[in-house]
Length: 359
Ligand SMILES: *Cc1c(COP(=O)(O)O)cnc(C)c1O
Image (tube, rainbow, N blue to C red; front, side, top):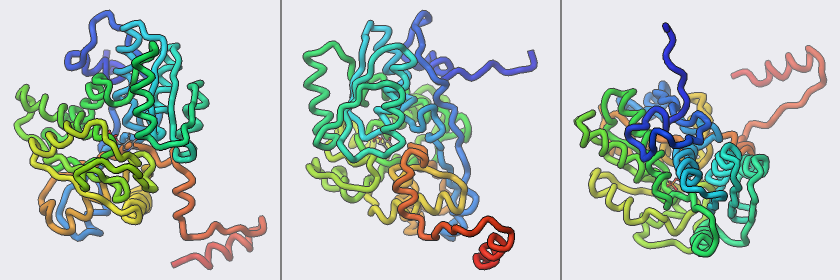
């Protein structure tokens, strides 16, 4: 056979490194195997000799990295006989849980903060048939309720406190190492609950300990300034940011993430909302890659640290783009300054519009 076997998802590919058995029924939508794209134009704009790659996790089946963890969490929930799953979500977890529950034929209950999730994510959760419960409170309040409910009801929590989530998500680090032939020098991520930065570090550590690579990256976590508990050194009760996916004040992987910083000799920092949106715009305009605001936090922070020299020239940097820009059309359109042009449907009118807008 001249053809390679069909890619059928990360559990199949990394079966030996994941807690599944030969007869486990795998719930998959072909997640993982996302592109690692080298930025062509932004390093020049920064005036620095650096290699920046973005791992475009927005190309997962439901448009975010959450699918990597959700396929594992739902696979294990089904294996253990669970008929329903539950999560609190800033949006992407609910979209992913809804899709994988649909695939498995079980029920998903999702708690979302009223009015604070991007439209695309809500559309996904509703279309996939999840029971969507809006709460008059933020993610952190929802998370606490979910933990309490799960103690009294036969539902499996699929937030990142579910250990199988991190197992699935560690595979992103495997893919990066395989593609680059080594670990990068720096790996930058947006941080909300800090599950993903923890999972990536697990993946890098595992490949290092198994002798598959001989280096490990410095892990760098960026938060939105209005919801930056890791910068404050304590929980934040009223987190606020345009980057709704990381509008989290009480990170569930608090202790683990501090260990990641320590072991990887990395750091945390924060980005203002304006900086996050500027990075999102730059990536779309200069590289043709559309991610959601929260995702751009990794690049916003990395660009600042590259400019200041904290990330030195000659470095190889990976920024995770956690979610797809199509998730949040409202925030995208709101920040576009060039107006849309409406003209008569004639050649002359269109020609004039083109000439008027040439630079
Ligand atoms: C969930 C999410 C994050 C935050 O990931 P954590 O594991 O909670 O730190 C960042 N960006 C997007 C788009 C997300 O959906």
